[in-house]
Image (cartoon, each protein chain N blue to C red):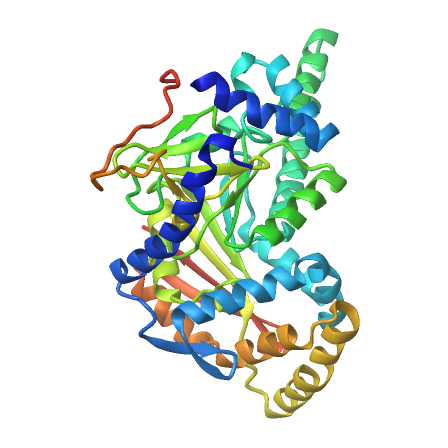
Length: 312
Length: 115
């Protein structure tokens, strides 16, 4: 990867990188000190980050298959509802954080594309006596700007997940208005006041410092921008809660072993869901970051919730 | 100096097989001109208006020849791999090419033209 001349320098930097990382950790006041959780274990923050990175590195290839089997395909409905709730208009700039394999990004593109098509059709219908030139010009418009300047940037901390996402995009034919960035939700590489919408779907649970991620979300959103979070949450109905627990702890890790050959990663997954703050608590955390008009919508009786907030 | 650095990655890309070579050729044939064969795909220009350094939130300079995003102030460079910019601070390299003997910091970035 590096030119020959940089070889020895890279070896030196390799050792330095560890030092650099430790320095950065200290600089952020984290080091390996503060304890946090990895599923039901107690680990240091640094350890947690590494373990979670490995979880997703392992499951990246089978991520979509696993989602379908674990949720019996219902995760697709949840994601559809998220994008419908977003109701993006053409020209919207979206940053999808922890968006790895692209589910939200693709749905966003489909949604905006169909709205744009309808817009252009309506425009045609309204002008009955169009010349052939005018008609072909509007078809040109559609071809040149099928998304009407909408853009989605997918940001994820995990290289493998992004790789899978990019491959999927190629297979499904998504290219226009879609970009991929390797970045940390706690430290986004984006400038202030840039995006119309920020989404994080099934990702915030895996962030070690949720407060930092929320602050970053606030920072990169334009005034008037919307924060949307889709995440597993708390089921209040006791009977459903028992069934859900049973399913989570007895079935999901087994599926993980059979399909992805990885029991432990899926054990982590179900444990992390239990450790994650329930609806009201997450709502307060989002308000603490500065968002207004924060509320949440339970889906599937609270198995999943969509939290929404605005930057004013 | 600059040409040495360009030849090795280009040759490596050719050796790596079709895709690297094709990407390099495509970039060369496109509006970029001859500057585009760093390592693998170059960065999408539309991203440049969003990206800043995650540490300092300051603007970055995109260097086509090495396919990196450079923060001059801090002297670090973020690589672009397969067209995806790696904006994790721990993965960035410092722009020092050789470790300085007296330990003082020299920001000797690549001598590419300012864009």
